[in-house]
View (tube, rainbow, N blue to C red):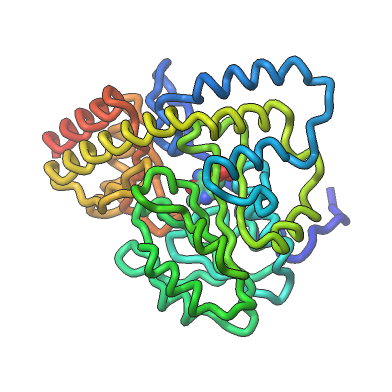
Length: 361
Ligand code: PMP
């Protein structure tokens, strides 16, 4: 069949997203540590709120997200008028790329930045410009060197995925200060809650005319399956994004669950404490086994092996034990395996499997 319908320029440059595995042949119960999900699941408070909201499925949801924006504002000390909510932070990032760039414009992201960035940039018709990182860390000077008069946006993952490293606040500020005021700095803080003493870029997004911060309910709030995220920045910019947001982008159950989750600070504390504990444990065990990894400020650890072949072998070894982790070749780490931090028992399983592998090498 000859197709006479042709896609818009740029669309065929978008690589199809390949998600992580969630099942393994021969294993009824797998330990899935490949998508940085919360090992404690969704907070009971959110599940209750969701069940209550599910009684009103026949009603259209509110279009202004007022209650959720108020809850986020209360908890983080932010002005609700400067917050926008989306279907995951992915959608908020999509709004940003679409609203502030187009054909002929460039968007900078960094070597190990989130894999959705080039997709979102192509979706906006803009040109992705990937700049190097240094030793698995965002390099402010490399970003600044990549700026041209076509640059409209810089997309930054902080803390990084899959590196787990963080750009300190001083460096973030230096970047914001050095960028031309016509370039929007987007600080993607999907893992902010796991980094001690870090505000996700909230202060900068509050003070500067060209900084937006994005956050998610998919990680520490355990609501990845519901798809909710938000962004915060100058009110004028948030209002621009709101113009391209579909009025009913979030359902009543999404809104209710997210509102309950963000107000449930005990839950966040419990999850952050468990994560910090297991992170020290896994990083310590990897070092003891002679497996390279950096200190992580997130809910995963990037283990680095001798080369791609060894990473593949370890991946297969873990799968044989029913454990799914993430190959991160697409992020520039053929030698890497990204391991989500689990609970006490789950992290123990990973350490035991890696120890056995090491014994057999
Ligand atoms: N940014 C980063 C760095 C991420 O790792 C993720 C999820 N993997 C996202 C954004 C998107 O998160 P969500 O759309 O689930 O909010």
